[in-house]
Image 1: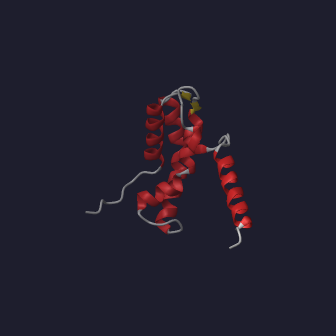
Image 2 (image 1 turned 120 degrees about the vertical axis):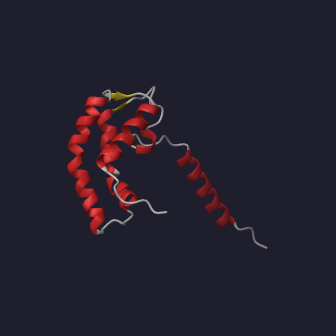
Image 3 (image 1 turned 30 degrees about the horizontal axis):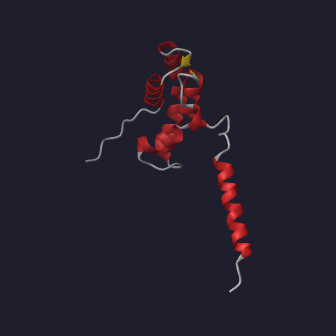
Length: 125
């Protein structure tokens, strides 16, 4: 039986690549990592509001129960876009310019979600 040199070399190269990629620093703009450790790396209020605004389509799917591309989903997105200026004013009036804790981030993000995407469909069950 011949030793599978090519297979061992390919598997070793794949494992080396996975190990190398795992040990790389996360990208600076990575959203999921940006909202961690806020006490030592505060985030601006506007960044949180912008992030919530970027999630509107998914929030409308959840709020309406209809998939993206349907009329009700489109109405929700349009309504959300018209609500955004008022929601931004609310955020500016109620929250500090820098968010420095997880609790403040959760409060601001849930307030903005509720402000931008108002849920008014009946509950099932």
